[in-house]
Image (cartoon, rainbow, N blue to C red; front, side, top):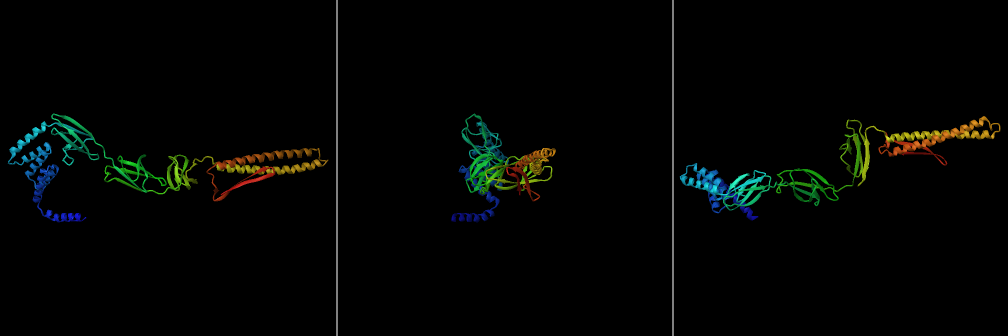
Length: 446
């Protein structure tokens, strides 16, 4: 730490001195640095220093020095260009420099050539070191000395490529390099860690994780036993590198018991709401996963109109199936209630005729006990009355029981039958015969 403080202090002390230097003095300092780097064989650094010196204080000598650096780097086309710019200043050694340029051109033409191509094209090509200036962009023809070289190829959005080549005198070769796109990097961090990550359905590994994926829109799903799964949509680009990834931080929540609701709604296009939240339009894409407990299901017709709602109970790890129709079809619950009412009335009528038959039977017994009435037309008429009323009683009671029972079955089968109407408890009653007489059967629905 002390050493760092001393270094900062030294730099801060030097800044005023550098600011007080004139551009010419600064150019001279860069020139001296360039000569030192050139002598040390650090040609890329020497080239940078000479260029900065020429920018601060342009001078033909800088052009000559820059040309020498390119020549030392075997970049003869660039060297010839710089020497030509130097000659344009009419230097005193113009004759010698012209001769040098001619010799460099002859040398360049004698070197073997290599055609460098990349897929995709447009990659910058450097020779000897990645820090050296680019020779151009692919497709590019290079002429280099007949020996081993290393080519460095770079293209934005792609991984840098390095290729060794061995050139021989008279070679005319082609080098094709397929550049690999740089995939954006997605970093997923969860609390707690160890969650399973999948990207577009493909497993990526446990969190925390750095994962290279194709750019564009992606769907990330995170799962951990005992916690609610999380799904997120992300969009990645080439800007999300390993040094600056797309960071997705997620806090997982404890899982709650859930079940499924399979809901069939007609007509199609009706809006479906669960607990006031729109789930989509019918037909739904699949079962709805809901927390265990009571939920309100509301359906609104597509063309407008009165909405229908009911409560459903969801149990953990189970599936509830419900059908809701807004088409105005037959209401089984209503039909069932009507059936139970009609059946009850029929049974009640049978009770009345049964009582009448009972009374007529007593009169028949009295007639038969009276010698004056016995074996007369009156006895025959009373016997016919008892017989007809008994038959009618049987028909009314048993048909009433059948109708009421059928209505009860329809009412029970109707899953959507309301428990109450206008807030009042609803009743259903009917009378059934037993061995000991008649029994009134009924229920209250609240």
